[in-house]
View 1 (cartoon, helix red, strand yellow):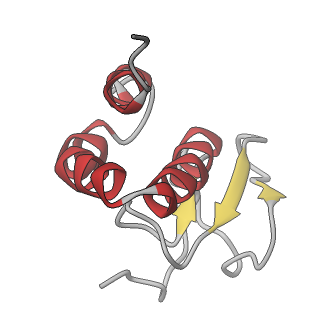
View 2 (cartoon, one colour):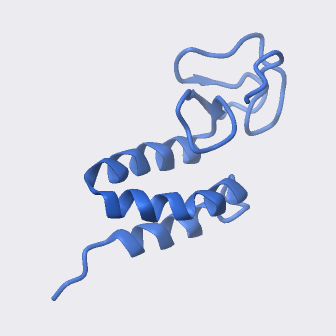
Length: 104
């Protein structure tokens, strides 16, 4: 369950006056914050890279059951990576490489 009693910026963890309803910038670090209520990450507030990954994976999962299974297997790695310093880009790249159609 997500703790919404004291919202904080997902990047710098500065306190926010309320959970934003739309994309907004953090006043402390000036990074974009995206609200999300159906995300594979454990937060209702996402960083820009997390938002992009979430939107792309939602579209891929809807394409086929095989994609949905591959994404489901990669979710623990994506949650562990969390950001670019944690390797989010590398995990996402590997997942998209796995899902890419092979040329015959």
